[in-house]
Length: 220
Image (tube, rainbow, N blue to C red):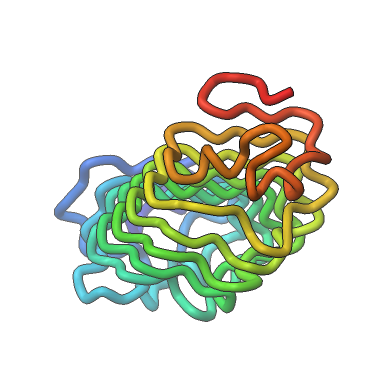
């Protein structure tokens, strides 16, 4: 029983939960006090299309790493998601996720790494949606994603990767931060022409980046 985790596993630091479709809830008292990393995969807790009002978030110790994988019922992330200790977040295979909100991700004030993958119904990203602490952003296999925010990405960003986003056509109108030192674009057929060296529409936005990789070829 998950209620007994604290007593049975007082030194637990990392927790991964995979393929447990019968789990219906987490203990209201939260997770063991020493835990730092939570990876949850294919959990069917959230069948009501809502983020759980559960002790796992309210009473648990500060988490630094969180991976959410395969929870198809969620259409959006919580609007007031406050996890100030979180440094790494991965959202994967959330097939009905349609939107992200600044009020959710913007409150993750220590977030450094964000990966969004296989969210096949995600259409666009909101303006000013990322925390200012972010250094690495990866968006991959979001097949319907058409628009990035028009505003500039965080000034803290150093690495950007966008792959298999077939409908994405351009980079943010405000350009990319000068802090960016590596960018990788793969299998984005509508975006690729705009990055053509010296002639592409988005070339002025990326010319300052020291390392640019487009479809496995280094852009001079």
